[in-house]
Image (tube, rainbow, N blue to C red; front, side):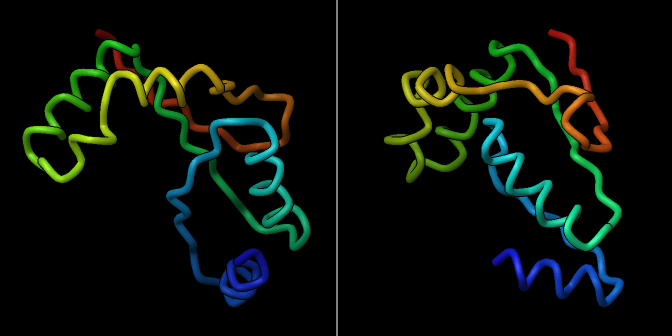
Length: 101
């Protein structure tokens, strides 16, 4: 996947990667993609309270019943406890979108 994305970037085409980068090792992999080829990049970090996330998960369970078994508060807590917010010292051009409760 990395080489494919790099090839696309080198060709001058933008790539949007909608993959988790919740932990530092995941973000290091993303950073290696663009840094090895000196490509422009932007990391978009949506900073919102857990309460908003849980409300959205509850709404999604109603709108998409097939996701009800996995889109749970328990799953959210399991994933969220490993989350590390991006910091400016990690070499990313970061855009933070803040949503207040």
